[in-house]
Length: 220
Image (tube, rainbow, N blue to C red; front, side):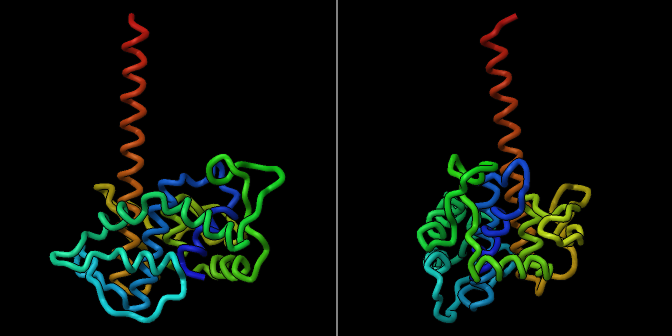
């Protein structure tokens, strides 16, 4: 499977409470797609820009859609902007695709996963490959999972190795740990972390604004 598919399976398999937020996961999935497009030669990353290329044939439909959506006119698109644009509703797209393919099935009980539906990964070869990649501590998968809060110092899926993904420096920007393959991949992972931090800041601001509005209506 693609890195995005593997990440989606790990996110649903992680047992994390509360479950991974759809917005966070969508941004990380977009980053996973971009890293796979790098690997297939469909794009390069030049500074903070996603530069189109001509790569190999893609067999994954969603990854093909991601490639088709690359901006091909100069000055090209900023990496973080691409994550926000491609990431809109992306976790729902992967959920519906994997469910249609028989990779996800309704869950009889237990915690809610994405949205109001109870779904869990089916024990397929694709799921086993994703879990094996996670247990081998694949640096890309670990770093992207870390961005959505999976594997941060816990023992999710038997890893027990903590989080080699990213940390934050003094100004709060992402600092990617060693282990990723190249600078382009590292830049994408850092952009994913920064985008998720920005999303969290928006959530917190809305919470504060809503609380202030509620207090205004309640009066003294």
